[in-house]
Length: 173
Image 1 (spheres, one colour):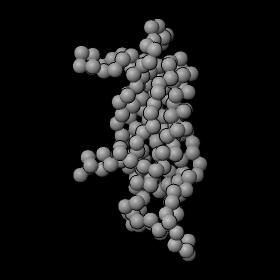
Image 2: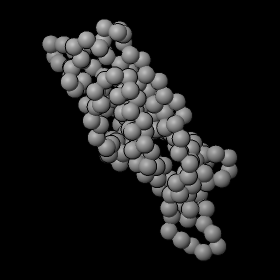
Image 3: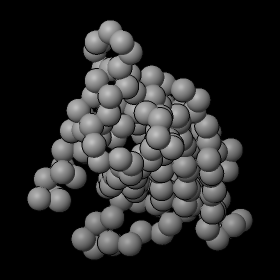
């Protein structure tokens, strides 16, 4: 499986003080989660269903965005997954294998922050911790749709959002 990843957070640049009158440890509050959009495009129907591979190769990109909602310490975090089911894994001899299907899914959630949170801690909370809550139901919706479209369900492993976030930070420097 191939993966790429991008992330962004929009909102105020100052540190957030969302504490009550008592100091407390900072935490991420999980609110509603919802499917924002999903589409699947099956290539070359009905011929694509002849001679399907037992396990198509999956090429996948992941995008995480977060935006602050108003002046409150409430954020909408979106996890966008775009994937292609390929007849086989790309090789040097065949760098562009036949595309069986393309699927795009946007899954989002509302998240709140509590406690006294420095600005440098907001981004990891929203772009590392929040997607960890969004990924399991997003993956389930995607896999069910692929299966309902008549293809073998791929095996998509959990994503290490922390490693991907750190990699993204290193690229921006």
